[in-house]
Amino acid sequence: MATSTTPGTGVVLPAVPFTHLTRLTDDTGLFEHARHAIARREHGYCTDDAARGLVVTSREGAPSTEVLRLTERYLAFLTHAQDAGGGFRNRLGFDRNWTDRPGFGDWWGRALWGLGTAAARGPAPWIRRDARHAFDRSVSCRSGSPRAMAFAALGAAELLRADPGDGPAASLLADAITTIGGPGPDPCWPWPDERLTYANAALAEALIVAGDLLGDPPIRAAGLLMLTWLLDIQTSGGHLSVVPATGWQRDTPRLRHDQQPIEVAALADACVTAARITGDQRWHTGVNRCIAWFLGDNDIGRTMWDPATGGGYDGLTPYGPNLNQGAESTLALISTLQHGAAAS
Image 1 (tube, rainbow, N blue to C red):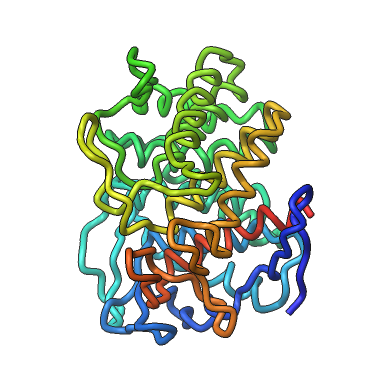
Image 2 (tube, rainbow, N blue to C red):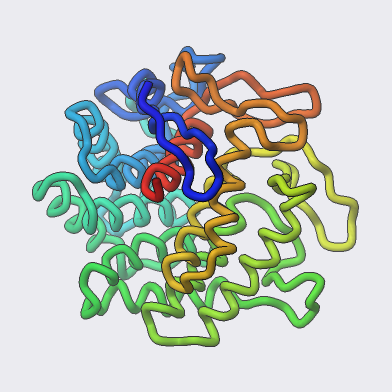
């Protein structure tokens, strides 16, 4: 397996592994769950994971034939999930029947994130064209969920970076600012909500990119403040220790387990964005800590992926990794290692 080295750390990085992602993908979509490395077909597919898959495959600058095939599968799944009103269904059974109705929850936001990334950075002209067509069908829709709007904003930001005159993308970013809100007045809890839940850093990242692309320095500063706090409170003894799956309510004790790879990947994404916009070295340190978490520099010193399969483990428990290798965790591993590979 090819390797690279993280700049400034000497840490040897494995090549970005797409083997398990390929194992979980059939001609319909991406299976959501696995028992160890074996796909659990009874749980079917979801739009959330297809969207995450489209993000990571579209980020590959020189994709293999297999990665290009994965990109097409995930784009086809998202366009099948989309309805005429711009909403998305989320859950498809193995029998290819949808089990829910179109909506505008987090999966809608992630779908726009995937479509925006593919439209701006997709590996082939026809991928970019079809992804843009699907994005345009939903860009005028809105969600009342801060996370859904944050995910959608990240897709809009991809397009606005490619075309600063993209009015619909700019409008979506502006509305996301309002829905997400800003840090509260308490310096000990500079967060819009009283509880941290999941993929928290995506909210901070959305404000950072919105403030940067829309020329709003106070919004950018608000996002950077939120991200600084998140990185600080999730660093312990020089390594990353992220908020667990149960979340963390303000003024209550914080648990350490079970930690989820999606938290690490969201933090890595946000730190990469902050580093690109500010040039501040501390954000590179944050990215390196995210990578190191997967490689074993975490609360119990255990590697959070399986080199034999290329799969990411589903969670960090007090007793070791949850050895199941589902789509979300594998995509979190891929996304985080992509940032290390890009910097090396």
